[in-house]
Amino acid sequence: MKVEAFDYDLPERQIAQHPIEPRVAARLLHIRHDLRDRRVADLASLVDAHDLLVVNDTKVIPARLYGRRGAARIELLLHEPLGDDRWRAFAKPARKLKAGDTVAVADGFHALVLANLGGGEIEVELVAEMDLDAALAAHGLMPLP
Image (tube, rainbow, N blue to C red):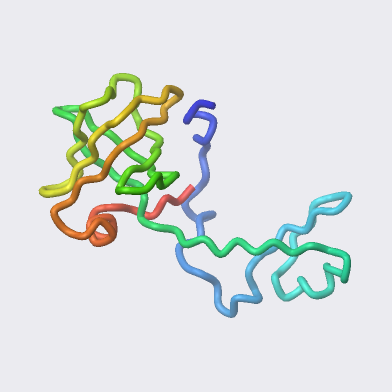
């Protein structure tokens, strides 16, 4: 899989910046034999006793990081935590990154490249002088489409 497969143009006005209020007014894509735009308020009328409802309650973190490796500007998008401050990340550009490289994000915060997995994906260890969650909150951006 190539990182470029996830690149597409999306006008900024189409990207939600904040949750809608009231929440039941949020849009819902209803898929049966066709696609229909609905609202969350319609959900009760769309499901029956034999349906399975799957709820995604994941929390979005500020996982987009911009840094430098020497003079080169590097963008990292953390997408899979591996434990012990290690992450899989999509990197742009990733081709020249290799194990041992350091991407400086801010003073006291960098990503150590552990492996280049190919296809624009790398494995990194995040190193911060402060708590890692605090470093991400201070220097990361929300990964909007």
